[in-house]
Image (tube, rainbow, N blue to C red; front, side, top):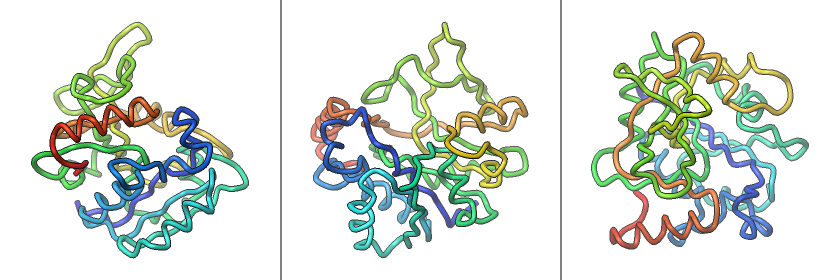
Length: 241
């Protein structure tokens, strides 16, 4: 299905990205010569997204001033200056802006190289709202640049996701992008909460699915991860695309 609206999670303090985030919001950290959030917005625009909600908190004025230069997709701000609400709480705070149709949520530090195809369009084509409440873009931990820990999920042959046990290693990484039905956030608690709370509920219902992405995902959560991702792309002879 073609999705028209997305939300970019851009309000966090980016603690692991210090000292860069001591003077700017994480979405404004330069990556391959451009702010991280511009890579995100370019991908969304190329996939046909018409409107993007961006939440703001840390150095909100800096991010908002930058976004005034963007005309496509259309930007709508969700102000979290009063309280940082985490991913789930931030989406619930913006619920009136999200509409009733499935949306894409996109972490502002999610970047990847895709030599062929378009992962966002592939994700939309794979989403089946009759049996899926959320569809996560999944990266192969073995082909990820940056910190992967012990992985996030197991995925079966039908794409259904389950959590790895604490003593296990999983090959599936959440790549920072998902399609989700926005009304799910309305059922979350008041105040800050993680989208993980929603996912755990969906796992219990059997309605959390994953879709394997193509190419190489880069987790740029810290300055060393950022440097590793840029070195990888320089070796490829291009930028994240």
